[in-house]
Image 1: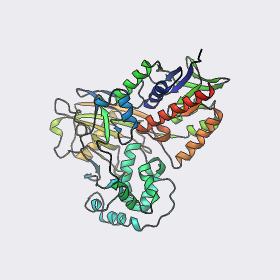
Image 2: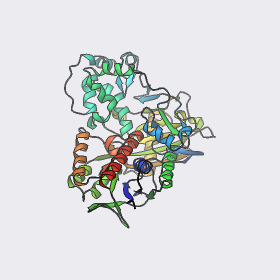
Image 3: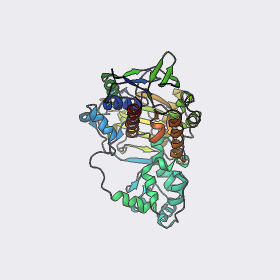
Image 4: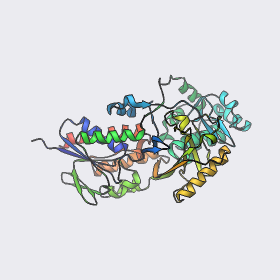
Length: 461
């Protein structure tokens, strides 16, 4: 009889579920998969719930990028391709004393042409003049910090009012201590002496046809729910409320222990946050565990509001706004959800807003719910001049949800993986802590880890 090979996946977020699905779908020999999730539910940082009379409004990520194929392909594989919808196309703003439209001709905030900047009131005359000098600034080695690079090339205002808010809103990051290599769109520009000229060249490449973002009509939660259902339909086992306490190497594989069970397996895919994984990795590699324990993770709070129609102003027609760090009190970004998504418009005419608080260097998790809501409303009044009286409020805490890619992150990751593979061949890392926090990046990492696990099984079983 053919021995059934066994894979344990630690973590039931989109990475872990995608890894389990890939192993089950791609295995050419009998292979069992068990997913161990510490929380009471799968989905990790993806969750959708009813709000303001709408059947589903996302509490975390509300879309995925379509310019890379992995999330779009997964949705198609799950039969959700026809159910995808895209944002309305409303533009975003930056708040600096007032709302300013984000200038055109940029690449992740890096100017590709100065014409759009010349007419923008987001920047002072001095800031524009400094940015225009960028092609003349000598090329000097950078130290893998986005903030230091952009300041050197374009000056303080471009960094503080555009690049840092855009990158920071994606990663909950302080770009002065965030790896340049972790943002490939900007890192690729450093191959040229001038970032402006490199961005102009990059902008000449025809963009992919179609929308940039997509989401199932029922929300991102339907993607992970369908994914979990597919894993179980293929024979996989998902155990929630099962926090892993230890992984040990045995004579013929690994033993993955939880508080109430021990799971023997031939390969392990660790798809849980880096710092949270350090404790149970220590029995395999002290060096890898020490590195994982040093990973930083930022916490954020998402406050979702239903604003009465009579309090909404017609001029707020964009998709929302970002708040630069020098202007931040508590709120870092505001999404005008009902403008961004056509299906997020309640029947009573109210508007759905999603407000983000917290980032690397600004922890807000110690505040109670009432305080966070009051801080949110105070900041909205400061930004928009209206003392909102929301008809419904939902507060979602995402503790240590955004891994921070410090400078030289990928060199540290390479050393960590090398230590782990030397001590524990067949144990693989995947997920937001490692090679990208976006949903497509997590899915890509899951597929790579699944392929590596299957290759290990083919070699050793």
